[in-house]
Amino acid sequence: MFIVGKVWLFAVIAGLTLLFPKQSRFLAGHLLLGANFGLLMAFVGLGIVRLLFRSETSLDPLVLAAGGILGFLAGSRIALKLNVSLGWQVRGNNLTE
Image 1: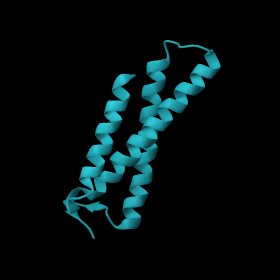
Image 2: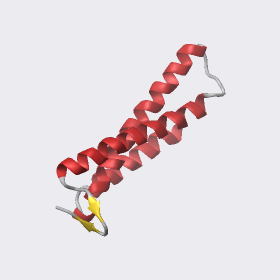
Image 3: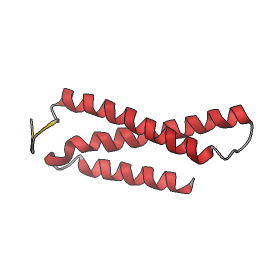
């Protein structure tokens, strides 16, 4: 459980750092939205499992991982749409404006 916060913090700091260079700006949304949605879904899923089973189970790490992956994918999908609307999508090796 302690690594979840560290991974989230690293992704948020990396996402904020990637906002500054124009060549990597499109990646910032993926890291920021993916990390936040991943963290949210991981703990929502964990809360649901704990409410259903009324205690800690051996499913907790699996639920955290599955929720994190699903949340990251959802955040990344939103980031794709955001990048298109802002004009930050990548075509080939060049960043379009």
